[in-house]
Image (cartoon, rainbow, N blue to C red; front, side, top):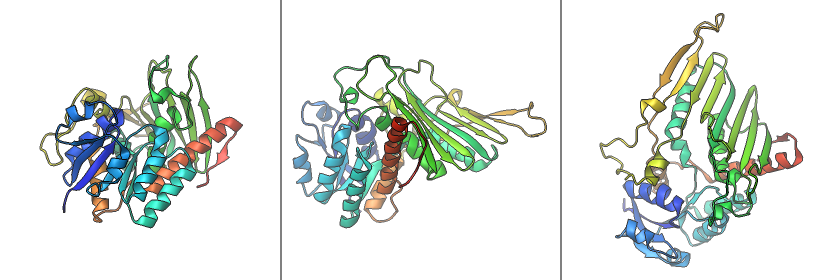
Length: 357
């Protein structure tokens, strides 16, 4: 099949770290253009790629089939809508939209026009998350009781000159890291029955929501999604308790920090392994082989599966070519945004709310 010509709109952290390297590494996708309104960072990084100075240039180009929206949060919905109406397939960085109504609208446009619309929930391909799924599938923890998922930072002072710290409903930790934590939880456990949340401003000076605690209620299971900017000593990335034992994992998937530091993503099919995690970072299980004697626990290191964001884009390619179903669907994007809206509502009203989609 002919390569799918792709344009990435935006060359900030998202475009530079999470999109262009992985598009370039997936056979069947061709990084044809980057939209960067000002500056020459994109041309220096990709000298053979066309640099466009406006979104309109990209949307008017019939050679471009896939548009990747990697711009500030508040622009995701209008740009995705523009691209769909121009007949392009679209990948939208998180958050999928600023409201569930916007998410539902662009999902409807994509369905009507038979176009692929994919929320960028790439952290389904984090190594630690793949490992967690494997541990759960193995059943050694017994019936699951509580699940905790953390993204912690220590940033006591707001960063200057960045849209991420500006007051907007689409900005802040809830819509920055919340989509990843909530999406992973929905993948693991499905739709919850209810939600209890606090969405806060913990720092002394801030224009954004900089912390949240979301509890999703399932039958006999509580799932906690948490993020904060005042965590000098981070909590475990994942903590899972069951009737037979627990699993705990510290640290984060190494793909983002490696790319920020300048790592090159090898093409799919290259024999070089893409970022295996060192054994010092592996998680551990603690299992009671005899429940009548819970003081005796068997502790085992669990090798971390290799994370690989290339697989996200390989699936988008296959969905556009009609040879595989889309893994991360517009409905997934809608459900995540709906949960985040309910989190704000629960926090504001200080009560537990039923979850309805």
